[in-house]
Length: 160
Image (cartoon, rainbow, N blue to C red):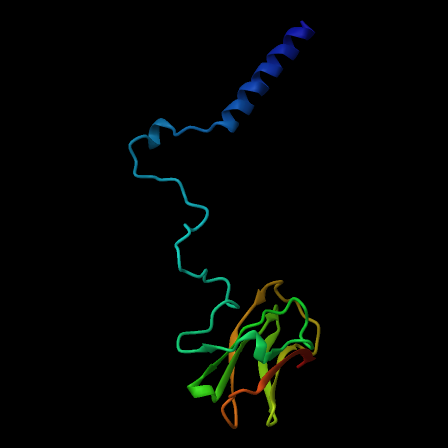
C-alpha cells in the first residue's frame, strides 16, 4: 500500500511538471487576438539603440575624434563621447549620475586645450536613493571655438 502511494505521488508530480514545461493555449483563448509578447527589439540595420547614449552625438552635433581627446584622468568605466555644436563654440559630453546624484559640467580653456570636468553632486546628508545610473548629455559654452585644441576629460564627485 505504501508503494502504491509513492507511485501515484510520482505520477501526479510528473503530470504537473510536464504541464508546466509545455503550456498550451486554453480553449478560452483559442479564438482571441492574443499574441505572444516580444521580449527583445528586432535588429534594424543602421539604427542605434535608445538606451546607449554614449554612442552618437545629438542631432546637429559633430563628434570630436579620439585623437583630439585626452581621457587619462577619466575613470576607466566612464562613457566617452564628445561633440561640438554651433560651429565649435559649444562642447557636449555624456556625463554619469546615479541615485540622488546630479550631473553637471565645468570647463577651463587655454590656447592648447579645453579641460571639461564632469561633476556628480550628491546630497550632503545620507539618504535613501535609487540604485540606477543615468547618462545625461550635457553641454558647455566656450569662449572661443574648439578648433584643434585638445579636450581633456575629468570626472569628480562632490557633496552638495
